[in-house]
Length: 300
Image (cartoon, rainbow, N blue to C red):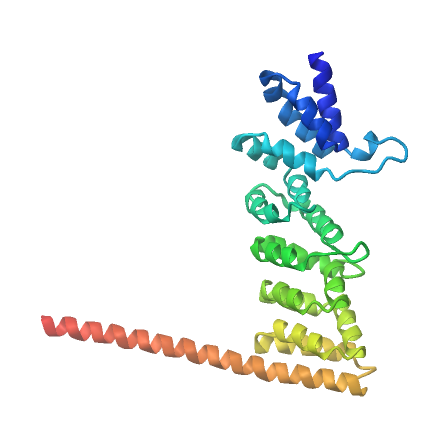
């Protein structure tokens, strides 16, 4: 009977039935629980639950079962699971009502998450928390996750946005006019990655859409966040000039380049201000050092 309970426990977990999983777990001995818990959780993470469903039966979210199994484990056991299945564990916390734990778990899992699983993380986030078709849109969770992610993940995010035919995330942000998420994402990219993203043909198509719809606040936001230096402005202006030879005389595009030129002036002023601040700081530091040397000389 004992082995039967173990089998039913594993089957219930893989099927996504939390009530049945709890029931059969209580039927196990303490020794069996220690033996079967890790193995069952890994099986539930690895297997496609649709193979456990009867015809016409609706698939249940696996997150409830997985979070229950994790709650039964010791800290060492959980770390072992996170190391073996980092992205699958993290993604189970994207289901409601586990959002509050998602960011805390992500801080732990970055230590184990290989670059080969970044696609899985981004695809699942796009489908689970930024799915406009299903009415799921939780930009605040994505913003916090992105700000806390390591630099190589943010760089990979740009790689994907540049590679796909339709820019997966920025298409959504621009479609819903989510200025706050656009600003946070761009501000948390390295300068070279921002320029790489905005100079790409695919992103320029999004800018073209905004220009045609005269969404000037979003146009100004995108180019303003990207052009933090005179050098960035010069690179992007050349790219945009090359891509608009056929429509530069159009009223809307004239306004676009007026905004672009205004951003360039701002970038130049910012650069000068930063240079002046740095020069002033160096001068003050030198004066303080000279003052200290004078005091020492007087003592002697």
